[in-house]
Image 1 (tube, rainbow, N blue to C red):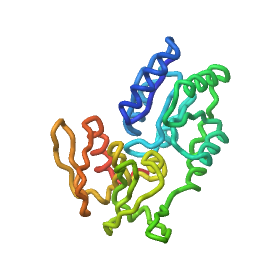
Image 2: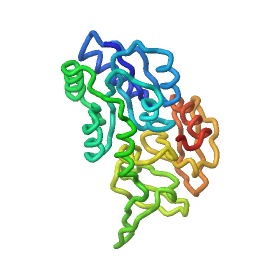
Image 3: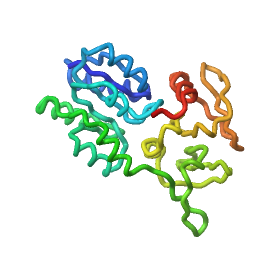
Amino acid sequence: MRIIIIEDEENIANALEDELMSINAQITVVQKLTSVKESLDYLQNNSTYDLIFSDIQLSDGLSFKIFDEHTIDVPVVFCTAFDQYALDAFKANGVDYILKPFTRSDLEKTLNKIDKFGQSSPNDYQAIIKLLGKKEQRSLLVHKKDFIQPVSIDNICVFYFENEQAYLRTFDNERFAIDKTLSTLEELLGSDFYRINRQFIVNRKGILKASKYFGRKLSIHLNIDFDVQILVPKNKVSSFLTWLENGILD
């Protein structure tokens, strides 16, 4: 079985490849892709694959865009951290999925399902996007003393993880603790936001500039008073710059 992996986190893509090949020696990962653009370029010129494992939130947009613009005739397994409502949307449209962080058992069940039922995924990705759109997050609830208040997503400059707690900082430089993980936030936020690493998610509007750093990394400077260093790892520099340059993708 020839498999394509679409995932912009190198360590996750490598772990998925290793696990799949250890489950079935007949599996070959023919290509690992990291963005919507790279995936479209590759798929439009290659057809020798039997199955796709795809992350949802990529550096330059949602992976649904790939399957909307290019007809796929093989099953697609989405790797997601969406909540149960979103998973119901997947099931209603016959799309297979695994939850992050995935386990060997998850992968075995998915491969067995595909082997048993064959092609199981109709290409109705627009229907999925429409359903997920009903859950679009426009604000987050935060606690401030004895009050609970909404904070507009548009007014958030950066999310970050510190001392086992997630925080957000607004463009007014207010800081609030939040009860969501960065992985959950990554799935809820739109393409205005980019997951720099395990510790930071930044709003494009909050980036003042980026400067070169040791080891081919980039150091990000925000347009608010924020004294924590934000570094883009070298394996994400290219996708980060593409995201920063291109603006919001349709």
